[in-house]
Each structure stands twice: as structure tokens, then as C-alpha cells.
Length: 102
Image (cartoon, rainbow, N blue to C red; front, side, top):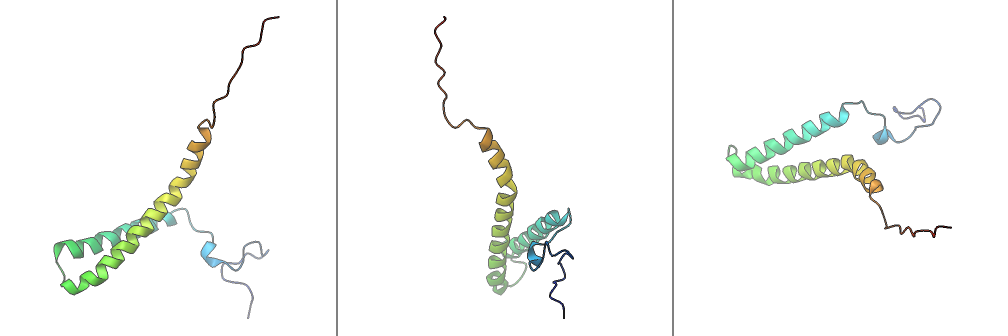
């Protein structure tokens, strides 16, 4: 039995937290696409009455959870841009007094 998790680096710099592992460059795009698909299917089931009303009790919470996940993901991805924009906004007015010529 090994103490290393499947996502553990040999030098032990990243170990024990596989949920914070290194993901591929397209992983976030894929997860957004999956969440949008789940949200769309859930809303279609509720709105079109294509399925029995009993499925609404399942589809509505699934749509709410997918929507919340999408909002959190958008907020997380927009946070660095908001931080960068707020860093450029002047915080206070600097008063420059003229110096007497002399």
C-alpha cells in the first residue's frame, strides 16, 4: 500500500488533494458545455411537458444546481478581470499644489 494518491507528484510537491489536481486546458470549457446541456435538458423537460409531471420534481432541482454552478463558474472566471480593472481605478484624488517661482 502506498501513501501516494494517484495524482501525487514524485517530489511530494503536490500530494493528497486530487480535487485540486492539474487539469487539461479544455477541461473548463467541457464542464461548462456539460452544465449548459444539463440545464437545457432540465428546462426543456419542465417547459415542454414532454415527460410526465413527476419528472418536474427531479428536473427543477437539477436545473437549479446546474444554474448555480454556472453562475459560480462565471464569477470565478470574471474575478481576475474585475480585480485588474479595479486596480486601474484611482483610489483618491491627489492634490498638487503649485510651487512659488523662485
